[in-house]
Length: 234
Image (cartoon, rainbow, N blue to C red; front, side):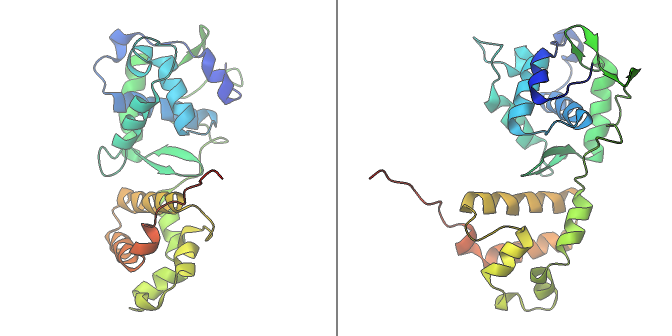
């Protein structure tokens, strides 16, 4: 079986705790992310929480209600996967979480130990053949690539202003152009996109671009750190 939609994740069978006991929660979450990417299901916070709870209910289900995902624990694991911590993954706010080369290597260790997922007792199948658990299918492989992201952002006007020593002349419109967002975008989403861009640069150890982002943050600190508007009832 191959899942066709996120709803099919509810049919994933739990794994035997004795087989995955030696692995950290971060490793288990990376395993879940790998399979979501393989199946072409967006690796969002919600879907990772669900598949974690289905695969590893003793670790990612609520204590008294193991059938219900403990989203807080999954979120903590996702944070620890980032470049500044374990370096297992990077994330894109619109698409989900994607494993780094290091993350793929660590996931392979988990797959070797516990095997691929099963659905209601049936192994994962693709076009009648067993799937290679090491890499996503070519036709469904996610396209998020930190190096490509940073290379593309280097062509933006704001980076050119930085290279030419004219960053002080840049305006908010240039910042939004770098992020690919609009002025009506909520401040929290602008901060999130800026943070994801920093993660991508950290994942490929691009020190120049990280220096650029530090300078941009300093230049637009008041705009980036402005609070989100509050909605009051009439």
